[in-house]
Image (cartoon, rainbow over all chains, first blue to last red; front, side, top):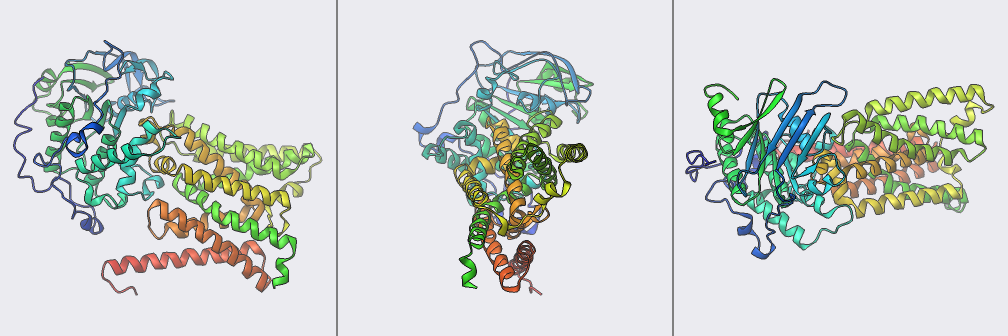
Length: 306
Length: 281
């Protein structure tokens, strides 16, 4: 798979990547650098952290096992009809690293349900799903989850979403999987958090409450939290959904740079330009899911929304 | 006035109010964050069932009420997760309604079929801080110390779970265990709070200080500290008011707590208007 260079072309002139603040209170928060995700400012984690502290992405898969595989898998919510049935996928790694897999399809087709099943948030209704070689229902899958970084589409809902935590605290939550209940938050954790904050251009907002941020800024916090986890696999749910055009372009650059650093990504998306970054896609439609080459999928859906 | 403090019942009341004032407002913040407002009613009904069972067995009804409250915490956690089909942030509303009605039904069957007088079980609902015995005060102090120590030790994991339980789980954090632990502590606290202020006024020691602190719009940690400060102040001021003006203790605490909430909301509104450069009134 060759990445489309026109998409990742010159964006250096991007004046501000994030969506406009939702209200006047957020306006003052925008004083922070808004172009920090533009290519000229994009830094790899290694640029903003002492080199010896940067953990190389660890491939946790048992040798020869695919990134993701499913057999006779049905997914959905308990007490309801399955959203997608009989999924058979054996996703052989196409390259040693730099793998981007897209979950594509129209709204309600089951992309996010599949993502949540991959994370163990939902149990498969039937069949087997393996992520990084481990069955998502097995007890050992908790070890795998500690190596995942989930970037949700939305802010948390309800009262819990109103809990006022600073950006720095929210980013630090990304380290908790590694620390568990009893681990102490130490120097390496603090450095990983600060590196992720710097990488996502959130230094100026680090002490602000996340509730005072715009949707785009909150998405950057989610990405920083994911980066702080130093994961073996990123799972993005509709990245860029709160970003304006320039922000989305910066997001594509970010995704490309993560993939380049050797960490695989799964993207739930129906943005054609993001799909173009993918090495392969799992297309969800009419209650089924099918693994396709990206070029085949793009050719099939040319001229219409995906 | 001072000689009142030498009366053992008053001394015990002050200790219980101080300890619960420090710790129980933290439960209020958990209750708000996890949307457990209806849980209070469920726990009350299960406590009533526990007290009834205790009376039937001839054991201390308060102890059994506490045990049933703790069981309620586990039950709510399990039921809310079954409802959502996984650890993805299901709410406990339906689970609570089920527990509440089922326990009340069993309680009335037990009243009918045994020699337990309903009024004895319902005594639990009329808490009175001046009626606490030494064992109950020790229990209040121990539970309060556990709440404070647990919150201080696990502040970051707790805030991660309160902030976004689903994402915390997805990162491999044992958010289900933390969620269950929070629920159990909240339920135990409500069970104990009922003994201090009475079931109908348990909000005075849990929700009102939390509400006052939260209305100031500060971050999580300072909100927790302020809630504790408000809790102690409200409890002791309410108690003093009750002694000076010969009022019932719990309603006096509620009046002070309500005034505190209104004052904080007014201060928050003034602060916001000042920030926007407008005249406060």
